[in-house]
Length: 185
Image (tube, rainbow, N blue to C red; front, top):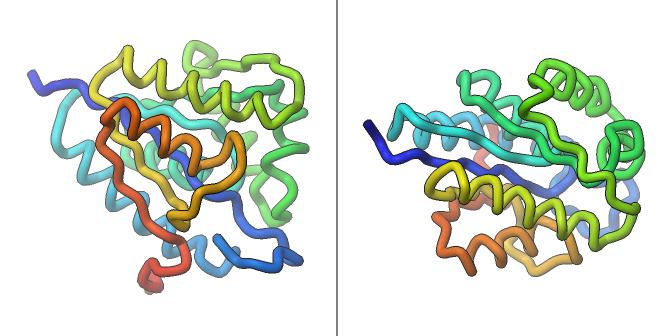
């Protein structure tokens, strides 16, 4: 039997239209989707024991969870707040169909693989959620983080902080900048 792999997915949220410095414009979604499906597929091909963990923000998190679903990789979703609150803080801001996609992922995930931390709405709650994801992943196997981010150190509770925490654990980390991914055909 293969060594279990715990795949953690995280990434920037899709840029709001008025964001002055682009990190993940909506036009890069298809390229990010291709990259995540390829990476999840390659890692899943290395073991017959894989679990995935992510939150559910628009952009990188939802794309990661959809890639897992497409490749039949069992995923656990962890939210810092109840789903309706989380949608308001981390899903609906980018417009588009992110809320529908989040709700489909949430409702199609068995309750045993959904966790709501019920924290107050603060930046620290996102940090706590990141730490919870890594804790669950460590319990399940060797941690491999897939991060869809620009490589810049960012705000509390964001992808950059999750990367730093994964580095402390000596987790395997694979990352890609949404702006430099090759266009998808």
